[in-house]
Image (cartoon, rainbow, N blue to C red):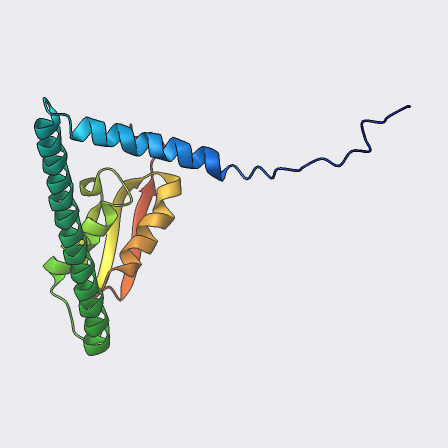
Length: 165
């Protein structure tokens, strides 16, 4: 007389969502076919798509080629630096004018105006003279000491309180 709705076995349908995505995918493929196989504009669209693909292929090839050249050049540079360090070991004297320019170039990475510092060199001994900010003096000396061919650094830098822009 009393029947319960919960006693009847129910058929369980497992919804995985695969059917939904299959329908959406089929609709997308159908739309793409209609777009490219259209009798009026399909040829132009196919040609445009082909041209864009070929352009992308050329750009990718050019970028890959540039990357290969860059890596090869970096490897050659690393090998040359290693060979230079092994062959010379800092024993060969460096011409004083070359040493001055090396130090000045290295200082250009530390301060804005490397020409404000007077750099002299004699037999690997570098003298730095001129005004510098207090926080830059240590950086300048360390920078000069790292230059290949420098044996000692004579620090004659004076403290400048003027701030540089």
